[in-house]
Length: 274
Image (cartoon, rainbow, N blue to C red; front, side, top):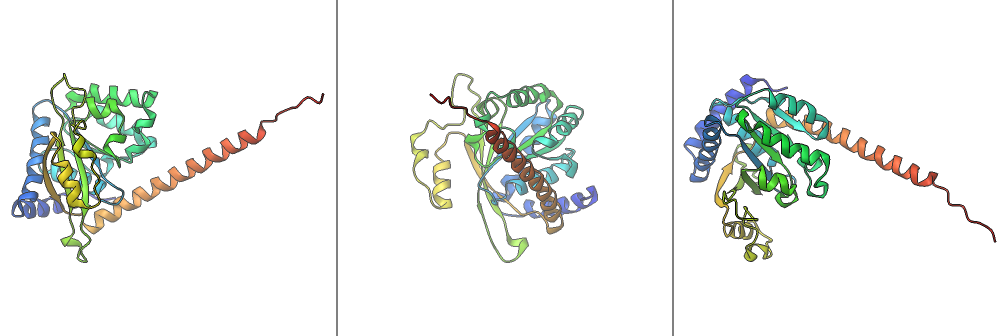
């Protein structure tokens, strides 16, 4: 487990690097300052972090949590939750604390749009509505933003961060990811607070530059930021925890499949001989 001292040490180094970095890196800090402003003004902040697998969604969410520690927001590795099994502990922790940063990884297992109107999704929407006065900052990691349950996407989420490009430099310290940021339209009269009604955004995109050009056309787009990778010790600790969850999730999936298969075999159809 990563200690809070390790998080603070890396957070100090990262803060200094970003303050003296590129415009996109400084914009990343401004985005986090905006989240802190909400927490300090009796509001919550829910950020949907999206992107293809391996792009760095979890890295962006955890890096944000580490930087938020320097700004008076509580965060440690116990604030990272994986899948449905950790939901009970997450609800308990978030509902009893104020001004904390939390990461819900693998939200596709919790808030997938194909599970819309299920008891779990309705409960999640109600939960996030009730805890808004706890002034917490929550990151929900899911591959596709439009796959997020509509009730959560349109009523609960305040910001959308799309991780759309990741560098693959040989040196770890030179790697980074590009993240487009979006803010929800506050107009209560609109049925589409994120701007998906723009036909231009449905054009084909095969390159990161094409993706960025399309995202800039959305009225909810606010800018692009540069996010560095997690340091290797913290990245390894995260990967170990994520691997344990994946193993458990896979075992549950296999068990459910075998039960369904056994149930179908147990059904016997009788035919009358005439």
